[in-house]
Every structure is written in C-alpha cells, then in structure tokens.
Amino acid sequence: MSFEEVVQKAIRGDDQSFLAAIQTVKIDLYKTALAYLRKEEDALEAIQEVTFRAYKGLKGLKEPSYFKTWIIRIMINYCNDTLKKQRRIILNDDLLDAEGEAEDHSLLEIEEAMQRLDERSREIITLKYFHDLKIKDIAKTLDCPEGTVKTWLFKALKSLRENLDEKGGVSHV
Image 1 (cartoon, helix red, strand yellow):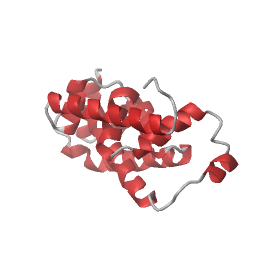
Image 2 (image 1 turned 120 degrees about the vertical axis):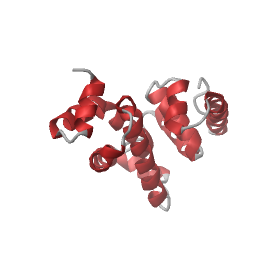
Image 3 (image 1 turned 180 degrees about the horizontal axis):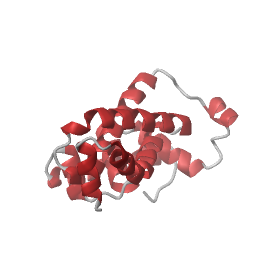
Image 4 (image 1 turned 60 degrees about the horizontal axis):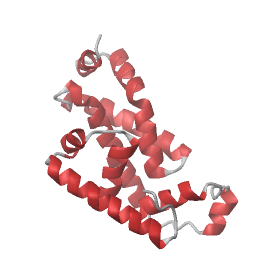
C-alpha cells in the first residue's frame, strides 16, 4: 500500500492508518521542532501537540500526497507560536554554560544566527536544508510562486551569513 493510500484511509477515519502516516513523518517533525525550539523536551511536546492538531484537522486535508508538507506546516506554525510566547526569556552566556550547551561553538553560532533571522527566512532555510525539500515543494507549502521562494532563500542565506560574520562565526554558510 502506498503512502498516499495510507493517508487516504486515515482521512476516511482509520486510526491505524493515521498512526502509520505519523510514523512515516515523525523524524521530519522532530527535526523541524528541534531546529526551531532547540530543546529536546520542547520538540517532543511539539510532536505531541502537532499530532493531535493533525488528527483533529485531518478531514480538511484535500490532497493525500501533500500530507507531509501539510503536517510540517502545522509544526512550523506551532513552533513559531511557541517562540513568540518564549521571546520574553533572554538566555545569557552563564545560563548556556550552566546547561553545558556551549561545547560546539559553530553549531551554537549557527543556531543563534538562525534565531536572529525573521520568521519567513528561518522557515525557508529549515524547509530547504533541514528537510531537503525542493524549491517546488517549498512553493506549494507556502502557497507562493517558485521565483518568490528563490528570492526569499537568497535573502535568507545572505542574512544568515551577515549574522554569522557579525559574531565572527562560521563563514562557510
């Protein structure tokens, strides 16, 4: 049975098919959540919430072949909402050192530079480089022309490079 057939059965109300579809995309959901939220506990909580939201809204999915982009879109929206709520919390270097997260400086610098990007730029880079989506698929996910996605991606990468250069960080992005 193809993935699209599994999703179609899930849309018709088959809970086992829904679980099978979630199992297929769970790694991508986890990567997205971790890329945005940066903490494993938050990422796991996001997967639970997004799975629930997807289950509730599954009947609204019109095209089974878009299940993966649809559920990743739900995850991105959830992560952005969560980050907006958490924006009041400012991490300082002492807290990072206390948590032991300052070991891999280049990864930390990239994560910090990603967090300084605007929401759309973070989203485009995450879809392209963390999920290996093609420009065409990103355009479908964001419901915009491919040329627009290319422009946004170019600007997002330029901003990311500038953010890294400011900090004297990784220069091969």
